[in-house]
Length: 637
Image (cartoon, rainbow, N blue to C red):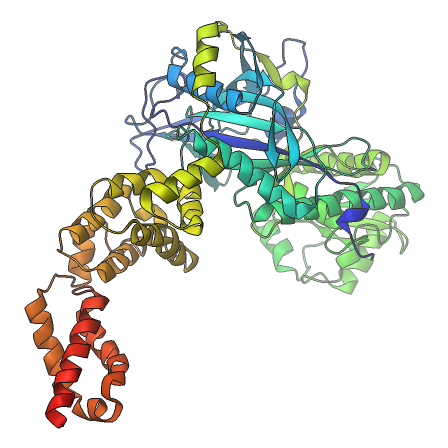
C-alpha cells in the first residue's frame, strides 16, 4: 500500500451549484412551495426507460430500470397541483424566475441567448413524476474572481428542482412533491486546477454572488453543490459527485475521489496482468444447497427469506479483491457499493474469508465445488432468483470495464465523512431531448438591459453596507450575510429597538451552537424567532429568555414561543420584585459577603440566576447584587 499525495496526480475540479430562486412560486405553475410533512394525496407509479429521438437508451435510465423500484408519491394540495402529478401540461414559465436567472447570468458576465429552448432531461430515479426534468440553457461563458484567480463559467441553466426523497421501503421508493418544480439555477464552472483547500473559497465566492442578488432562497436544502473530479492519467474521465451538503466537505470529497480514481488505475494495471475471461455458463453457480449448514447469520437469514446464494469464480484472480493501492481503496469495496444499490446488503469476497461466520471448511467445500484453487478468487452474494443474474452481470461488467479502461464513468454521491459512493452510471447524450409542451422563450433587448441594470453590489460592498447600516463589526457582518437569516435579521431590526449585534449573535452563534448539540433548527420557525424578539423589545421577557425559548423549541419540547415560555416557566418580573429576591439572597449568604466582600458577586450571581434566569436580565441582576452587597458591607462596618 502506497501513501497518496493529491499534488502528484494532477487533479482538475469543476463545480456545479444548484440554487433555488426566491419567487414564492413554482417554475411552471402557480403553486407556492411549502416545507411540509403533511400529505393528503398519495399515488404510485412505475417508471421505465424509453428510447430517445435518436433511438438510443440512456445508460443511467437503463440502470435505474434494472433496480425494479416502484415509486410512491406524497402530495399536499397547498404546495402542488396536477402539473406536479403529471396529469396536466406545464403552465407558462414564471416571469420572476426568468428575470432572476438573467440577472445572475449578467452578474457572472455570461453570454445570454436571445432564444431559450426548454429541454427534457431524462430522470428515472423517481424524483420527477414525468420521468424527466425540464431545463433551459440560459447562457454560456463568463467568469468571476476569487483572490486574484479567474474562474470560468461553462453554462447557466434555469430548471425545476426535484421531488424530496422520503426514503426507500423494500421495493418502494417514496417522494414528497412539495419541492418538485421549485425554480433553480444551475451554474457549472469550467474545470480548474487549484489546491483542495481553495475549492471551498471558490464555492463560497460563487454562493455570495448569488446571495448578493437578494433574490435566492436561504436555508437548509436551498443550495446544493455537485463537484466534478478528474485526474491527469484518467484518460479524460470526469466523475460527478452529487450532494455535497456542506462547503467544509468539498476538500475531503475531492481528495478522496482523486485517491479513488488513481487507485482504480493501479487496480486496472493489476487486473491486466491476470488472464481472466468470464464464462457465463461455468463461472457462476447456485450454492444455496451447499451452504445450508453454513454458520453465517447473513447466509442463513437469506436462505430463510427464500433467497438464492450464488458464487462467481475468477480464475487467476487471487488477492485481487483485497488489493489496496491506497488506504481505503479496494476492488472489493467498489463491488460492495454497486450491489447495495440493488437492495443487496453486501457481497463476500475470497480475500476477506474466512470471516462473518463463513468457516474454513465452507471455503474448502466451495473451492472444490467451483473447481478452483488458491490462485483463484470468488464472490458470494445472496438475493432473489429474479434479481441474481442482473446483479452478477453488473458486477462482471464493472470488473471488465476497470480492467480494460480504468475508471468507470459514474455519478457518485458524497457521504457525511467526505468519501464518495456509487450512485448510478453517468448519463449519456441520449438523456436530453426537446420539450414539446413549451414553446421557445424569446429574450428581448429590454430584458437584457434590465438585467444589467439590476446586477447586485459585490459581496465586499454588501458587507460594508451592513456594517455601516447596523453598526456591526466585519466578522458579524460576514456571519449574518452568509447565514439563512439575513432577511429575517433586517426585518426584526426594522421593528424593534434591540441592539443589532445581540440579534446577530443569537441568530448566528446561539442557534448554530444548539444545532451542533443535535437540536433541530427546522423546528424553529421564523415567525417564532420574530415573536420572541418582539416580546424582548416590549420588556415582557429578558435577554436570557431568548436562548431558553429557542432551545425548548429546537429540542421539540414546544412548538411556539408562548408554549416554550409556559414549559420553561418564563415570566417577566418587575425590578422591585427582582430587588426583593436579591436582598434575600444577600441576607441568606452573609458569610460569603463578609469573607469575599464585593467579589461575592460571582458566587451569588450563580445562585440568583438559578432563580431568575429567563425572568430578569443578567445585567440587572448583577447591578442589584453589587448594590445590595455594598449596603450589607456598610452595615458590617
